Image (cartoon, rainbow, N blue to C red; front, side, top):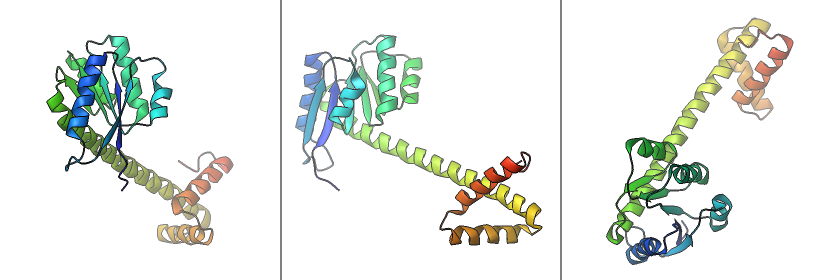
Length: 207
């Protein structure tokens, strides 16, 4: 694991509030032993945010919005959806609908009226932890969906072989597996190709 400093991007138009975040980060450090250094970047306006965020390539993003308008919030939620980084968002006040929107947008920590220097370290830790936990859940969900889709297409391919070759389900799977090994392909990829080819010749074959 690399020991490079943690790059943290602060997005805040208010220099004083941004300084509170930066001081909290520098005083607390990061990691359990608090020995890892941080490099703090600051964006003071919200014009063309995404390319500027990409140029910094931060590990964590802290957004301080004071009392944001709905348009500003939606812009920041869009940043959260596209940046795919741990994001903590500080606001002075909020409502239930906005909190739910923040969660849906992938904001890792949404803090209302909580900008205090002594809280920055714990908020940063929670933000990173929640982001990684959410990513793990997303990965597990994707893998489960992929496995289900692969089983479905393999079953379709077996059904096609059973009809065309007049073989049992077990023999159809053996044929699929042997052919995939001979062609150095995944069984699911071969199954998709077979189902697609069958659909071209007989639109009802993949059903």
